[in-house]
Length: 173
Image 1 (cartoon, rainbow, N blue to C red):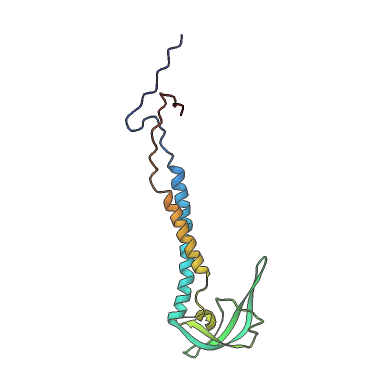
Image 2: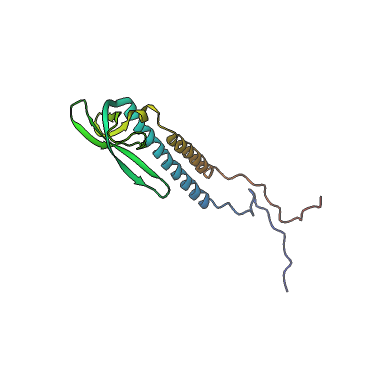
């Protein structure tokens, strides 16, 4: 013989409900947080590169002696190779960190360049420095904030759920 079934007993504090699984939420939080930190680093490094040349760079005249070509799947990027004399009188030939169009600036063109005082091979076209950091570091900064915000959501405490009453059936409404 089977014993009659007894109704579920409610324990103080919501008893019968299973606690939410926190481990997957923490994993997502760590993932999005790490992604946000990565985007923040790349945004900061691009801003820092621009600010270093803007604040501490030396502006001199240089000549474009060629182009370094970087071929992608759908595009080709050209980085000018510049020859210039530093304020100390040393002649430096270095590839610029910003791209340029060979049609607009052919070989032999005289251009204003900005180089870093402590590292003369870190050079950019002066027009690139004057134009600002561009949109990329701003976009990466936005993505960093978005990912860090999304990651922090997973570390918030779980919302309290009303206890389910399993002993009585729902009343028809």
